[in-house]
Image 1: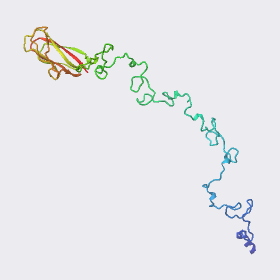
Image 2 (image 1 turned 180 degrees about the horizontal axis):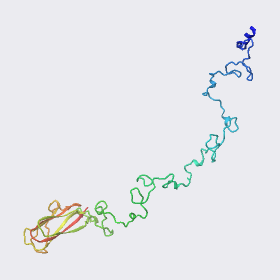
Image 3 (image 1 turned 180 degrees about the vertical axis):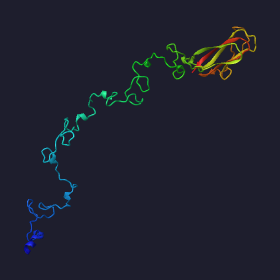
Image 4 (image 1 turned 90 degrees about the vertical axis):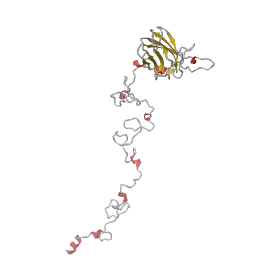
Length: 311
């Protein structure tokens, strides 16, 4: 009995290599046996074997996933499913790299409505002047001018601009063959030589109404032209018996253009100036011409001032 009990107790050693009842080692793949650790076809793989790692490089096997391969992938599966794709225009096919539909030169489908107000891809409306956008029609700074807008008509009344025709936009001089609106205004002194149209200036006559009254400076302001005084004569309006009645043409600053006129004369008498001061005879654009009245009686006069317009 003791021998049987000993036999039934621990006896694994009997099955190890060289044991009394040793098991086979590394038997054929289909036969149960003890297994050594290693890379052999009949060996077991150790727990730390590098071949068990996901980081190892797989052996080439792409062909197995192609159509007809041992592990073939699906072809042209639904749009949301990854698969091999053939090239073509089908909903489940891939577009080829040379497909004409990839070219910018293709004709787009009609889509103008999408860029209108309220469209899916609406353009801006009445954006800043330097920004391209749709434009409404109107008179606003960011609006477009309508084709029938009255402001486009040549018949509209121009803004005041007379001064520009004496300076930057001067009107051409009239000649025998060219119809101009005014002679040239350049009246610089002419040296001996041939005369041309530009040598002839335009003259104007100012008629100054000088009423009777006490001594005063009567100013005529805001001349639209630069001009030079070339002649002054006076017509008496009423008889004056006071030797103290005088008058004089001056600049707005009070500088003398003519000598003092003695007005102690009869009604309707004409008095012409005897001199014109060349230092004060020119009046600038927007300048002032003054008549200095020294008078103690009720006799007035008219003063005729001949001027030539200057450039």
